[in-house]
Amino acid sequence: MDKRVQVFALAGISGVAGSYALAGYTRQFIVAPIDAVVVRSTPGPIVAWMITNVGDAGHLLHIALSMAIAGVLLGTTAVLGQFVGAKLDRWFLAPGVAGVLAWALTVAITTEPVLSLGAALPVALFTVIGAGSLSTADHDPSRRRALGSIQSAIGFVVVAGGAGWIKTNSDTETADEEPASDPPSPVTRRLEEANTQSLDLAADNVPGLVSSIGEFYNVDIAEFDPEIADDDWSMGLTGEVETEFSVTFEELTDRPTEHRYVTLRCVGESLNGRKLDTAVWTGTPIKPLLEEADPEGDCDCAMLRAEDGYFVQFPVEALEDAFLAWEMNGRPLPKSHGHPVRVLVPGHWGETNVKWLTEIELLDEAMDGYWEQRGWHGTGPVNTVAKLWDDTRLDDGRIEVAGHAYAGTRGIERVEVSTDGGASWTDATLSAPLPGEDVWRQWSHVYEPTGDHEVVVRAIDGEGDRQPRDQSDSFPSGATGWVSKEISA
Ligand SMILES: Nc1nc2c(c(=O)[nH]1)N[C@H]1C(S)=C(S)[C@@H](COP(=O)(O)O)O[C@H]1N2
Ligand SMILES: [Mo]
Image (cartoon, rainbow, N blue to C red; front, top):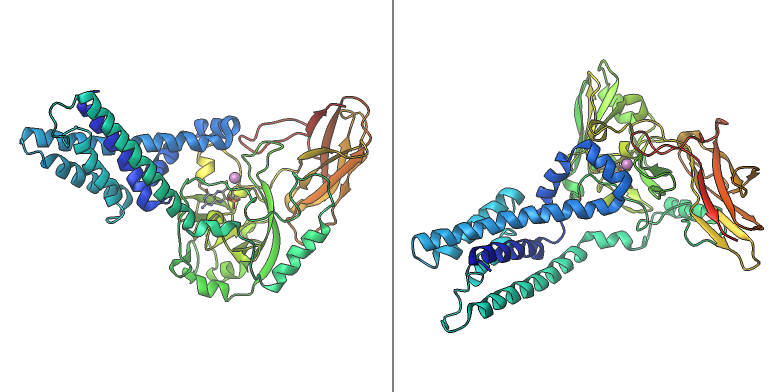
């Protein structure tokens, strides 16, 4: 292999690995800011296509691309170092220049002077090792030296990968999976209530009425979650208001506190998808804060902004019943769900429920939010849906079909099931409604199968409206249609 190519490749790869070793899979990893730019600059139609066709694996694609970009940038610093070293005929200039350039580049990208050494040192090292100049034995065939450099690079990547993995997993995120140790009692009561009211299902594929923190879905524009300490957080109420002001975490959590069941559903999920979950959220209503600020804008619309660069705009009246939450199922809000404070807007699509909230700005004129700029219409009320998440054959030969149904603030009144492809319908068993204006219900139906058949399910909302039959994709306004499944005898 050409020496320059080898230096470029080995330094690039080990530089990325070294950054990961010190920073872990966080916003301080050199790939994180690059990924943010990649995601932000991907055109809306491509994003919509990826969401509807590739799904969650799409993340792997942009992460791989961002890693490649980071590797190319770091590899280039090594080649430049080597060039300077050769030009001035001073071997030590090669790793020196490469290391300094790689360090400066990484600091420019991550703003982390110390952690950037994680990228700079291996780049410097492999500028030398990659060129094979560490070996003084001139009779050593260069092929062997090349193999030696590749082996040491692989060794380095494995060790750095292990270090980064430990760093990533020793951080706060693992706390997400742990059960609430000692949640305050109103939350315990809510969790117990949800537990008792969940249907007793044979299915193990259908969550109870409250999703655990670990199973609650996640949708983020950024691959790397913001990390905000409670004490560093504050939220401003700004723009077209009589009095602008801001609240700190302490001030917010001192306000009157409620524990609400709220269900979230993402507009981008497929019809029978699983981006639909419910938790018990602890927080305080937004309305009194709004009244203190006294909105006076012309369009009666609010722009909500977040630490990760996310922003969404919708009519301020949707905030009237909205809620600022700092706990989820009795635990401090996990990083991935918006720590320390997120918004919950009853009955509206998931995208209005801003995580890592930093600002509520009242506008004079309506504007598009992040997803609306990319062609989605996801700021309004959710569509009605009944999910068919499981079919289980019982010991006695009968079949149990089950799932959840959700219609936002309209509520679910009834779920109808057909086991003959829609020719005839029966009412499913429904879990008793939980208190709250924006909560799903569980449904199930057990029947005697006769040969191959098609199960279809549809919900009727609290206003008596049946879920529309017409099928449409999630893009741009949420999937519609009835969920159905062929089941063989
Ligand atoms: N700051 C911020 N808030 C956000 C998002 C985001 O990417 N950044 N995603 C939105 C979308 S599209 C959805 S569906 C919900 C998902 O919330 P969850 O990850 O807690 O389930 O958060 C919304 N709030
Ligand atoms: Mo979403």
